[in-house]
Image (cartoon, rainbow, N blue to C red; front, side, top):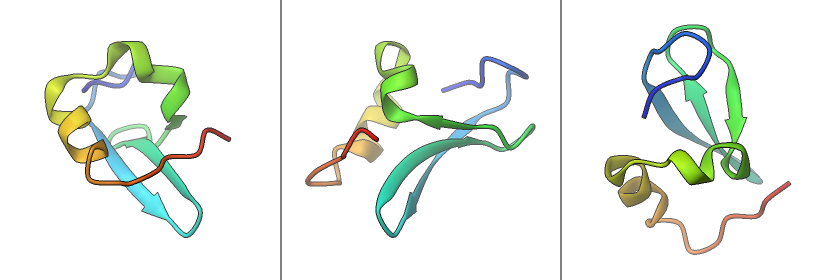
Length: 56
């Protein structure tokens, strides 16, 4: 999945109480609900590993 701002790849980042997508280029972070409609199959597969994702 690509960043809207710079086009670099987004990676799934898990922290203590949150899961976010972070850009490898500009370092911008997206909450899951911000990009949910654009998720690609690869990113969905990573997110499926988590039993619950809380939208904050």
